[in-house]
Length: 117
Image 1 (cartoon, one colour):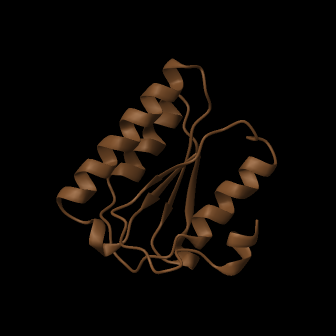
Image 2: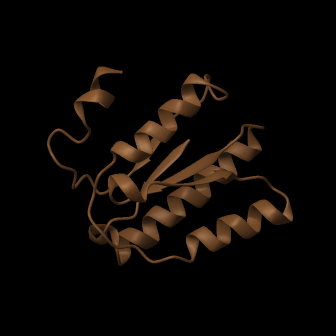
């Protein structure tokens, strides 16, 4: 599960690098026969789950559509981590979680509810 920071501070070179990390991570996951999901976030209400990225035409199209967007907005990882944690508790319990961000997160970076889990 990849949680990608799409806040304004990630625009420019950081955006290019983060998109390359997502693409490389998805490629590695598929080479290992692993499912890969992407969740983007900027604010708690802007967490967008792209879903499972498959190696078929539909999966590639959805990935390219996602990677074509530019970044903007604030930074709140709570929504994305909630989506990821729900997946980890349900159908992806043996998955890894990768947080792709510039580290410009509030302190603490998530709500007390998420920290408690």
